[in-house]
Image 1 (cartoon, rainbow, N blue to C red):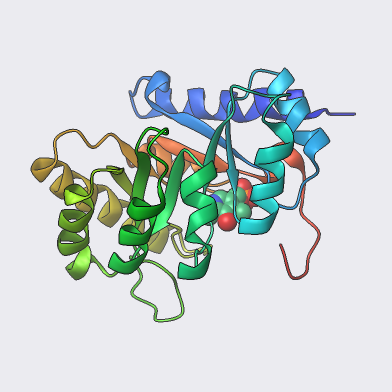
Image 2 (spheres, rainbow, N blue to C red):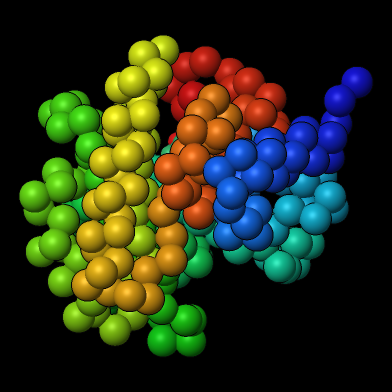
Length: 234
Ligand SMILES: *Cc1c(COP(=O)(O)O)cnc(C)c1O
């Protein structure tokens, strides 16, 4: 039987191999464990195996997990990676360390206003919709610079980089093309904001391609915690 610890080690190994293949240093690539829909016991198991970065997609579920694990797993760094409505920003501003899916001015301003003074600034990735499909969340590349500038002026937010969910496809060329576009967009933004250090892309099925195109943070769920139940929250 494989355990969560085994699967975590396997994910780390995949990162190391992918880094080697691209002549990159594996230390530049962080592993974010995506624990959405999974029980707290799974998070504790991953934490016991040394994992510290966890990602959650749903405000209510995230809120209860962060609160329940505060004293048991005090070193967890929490990343919010789901869509966020403006009436729920307060939870993310109050409990999370990172927010990966920012794509609107209005949300940025609310998160900044609601970030408690006692906490460090909230780390931000702007989500980019590289395929341009209207059904997808994320900002279109042409509007990226304006939003980046807004975030840069807000004192309780720290812009760290970009996040994307490329089209799920078996078409390797299309996939490569999207990863390449994201990488070049990130480099363009970094030329203006040299402190940017995060390109959040790559999931269980495409982490190798993401690392090949400069990802610095892969978000891995099912490869660590197993398949999720299909349905509303999957
Ligand atoms: C669920 C999710 C992941 C993890 O996906 P897997 O395919 O299970 O690795 C990564 N990023 C985001 C934004 C997600 O919603």
